[in-house]
Length: 453
Image 1 (tube, rainbow, N blue to C red):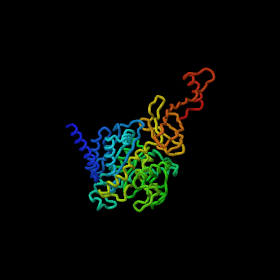
Image 2 (spheres, rainbow, N blue to C red):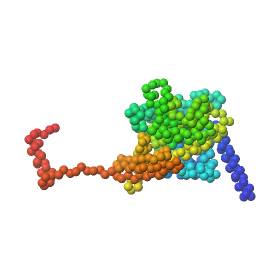
Image 3 (cartoon, one colour):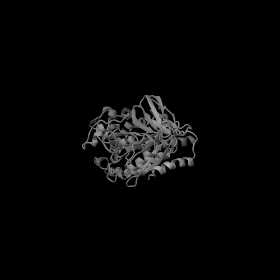
Image 4 (tube, rainbow, N blue to C red):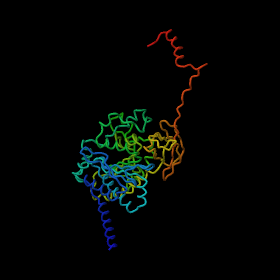
């Protein structure tokens, strides 16, 4: 009897997994149900939270995977995927739902690679940043979907042209040599962005994300910063000028990680376009202002790329399984890229973490900062680097370290408090005078020359 019961339970679990991995388009309610189903199947390593609401009041849900959901563990990096920023570009939305179910299923099966990934990484998955736009596109479906139908949010705004334009600030602040990290936002920025954009900005300000990708459609290529060329501020027409960040080689490696793990992106020829290795600098393709990718790099510690995943923005359901198989390994491999470079703690002499300490790498003019607990994460290619940690009120510390091709190198900093030197006391000849004697000596001089107002 017990053996029969175990067989029945096993069969039901297989059926449950098969049903969960069905390849269908999900409207908003169905998407929410899919997320909560994953959370119920893997309750100890997942959490669902909302970062805000869309114009029409739909939640912007995020599914988190971690061995301690809801808690940031020191030295454990934060990673995020964002899908469906353009409402009619739907493949990313479905892939992230599939990824969520895949991570849960493989964790339950004790898959060593997935278990290690979830235990060592805090993964945040937002299937839809623009649920209102998706509903507009879904009403027409794959067959009748226009190229722009449902692209924008309910206010008719393109969310990937809605972030504060920090590129222009950088270019005007001394051309390309201007500040290019943690650029402050303009005072009136909240009045200039949509509810969805506001929610994302507050989200990425609250979590110390290290690596990210946002998923789009309409092409097949991995796109990396900068998206906006410096020349765009001089000309109204589009410019295709390669505009690299100080971390250009690293971004190319991140983009190639996805491209070469993908079924066919790395081949170059897709959708009538050719991109060598299946990657491109954003501005080299076409210049884009106020995009989310550049904003992440210029405002936070997060390195983000944009993944264009399908020629058809709204592929038919019969194509979803093929697309999932083409992207599954790439989606997992890209998350693993968060574990490279250096990481460590910045603390004081009493081993208290120092938040907001600046981590500078000699020769790369882009700094990152430590999180609230004092831990930091700096993505780097293999090589030898000279790294400096500095914080207000402390003496800076510089360490030379070597980064290997596998796990990140641990580099801890312990900063000594900056000693404020007092100015030397004025030496008096003879006996030191008290205030009354000093006053008596000064008064005759004042009365002689007259007191000035």
